[in-house]
Length: 118
Image (spheres, rainbow, N blue to C red):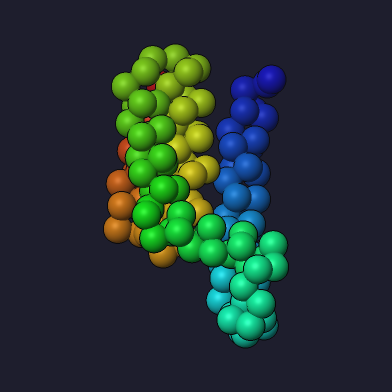
């Protein structure tokens, strides 16, 4: 991969991650159609998926996994650390969008610091 193309790929991945996170939040979690439908028919697979995502948000699984990946990426040298930091950032952005900003902001900052370090 050329040195000029190298920083573009993570930016595209992060942009897609951000767009998917906002689509999930506003199109699935906060949409009134799903709230009403899942109140009436809680056994539908879409409602089960929505409930599982709600539990992930409640227990901050995305934020904790983003923080773990970002810290591991910060401590590991070379490509392995860079890849873990990118994974931490890709997990931290949805955690920021999906209501766990207080914990995920640390993961995003740590991962961002690792990604810009040589």
